[in-house]
Picture 1: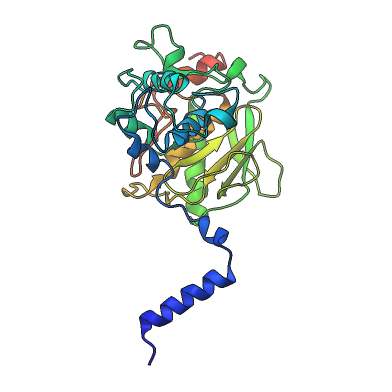
Picture 2: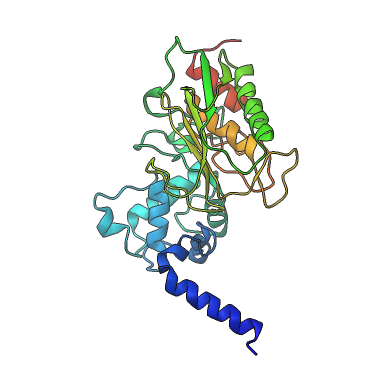
Length: 307
């Protein structure tokens, strides 16, 4: 008589024969940013396995740009440009500016985050672009202060693809997020049917979804949106999303992330204030559902809104 374990082994072997290994490789081995943990203590002059991934991480979020990426990002030397990029990252997130991957820097880098870079084309720089960065507002804008034209005050939005959340719950959460931006601006927002053309397209997608900014599976990049006047807002469908009042410690709050991404659609870049909605990172179980002073000052400054 064949044992249950033997039957399971035969079944797995059949799967491996029937399907190429690439089918199984789409399942991530650990968290997307987990490699950073093993680089703690790494600093300039060291060569360590995984440093090339750190270079790719910092290049992805705008801190690093080699002239020849094929030559420089695919080796594991902690060189001068990487040290400079780490220092800028540490300055932006209020860390000790050492250029070394200390424990606090590693912890910060591993946090799930928005996919929009902190620095775009070397221009939008969060805290590192402020002369007196420890005082006053720390909001930032996209390059050339990209924004919607003065005549554009009413926006339509549509859900192109839905998650496994209940439809009525999903729509209610998005309505609340748009309503909070409407309350502090001169903008209004209306949902339209999926087949109707809209100013803002919202969808849930996995991995490569055609916009050149692939998602990376659970616990990495949560969502991304594009500067005006693109109007695309994408959530990573592989995340465990919550539309309830209190997400648990394994879930990401859809309203909080949606509120952040709508800020990008309207023209705000990342803030260096951790309590701000436009701060780039948010942990599982955390909610940031109310616009803070930095968010409000930023959007009103961009559009010259008074009152």
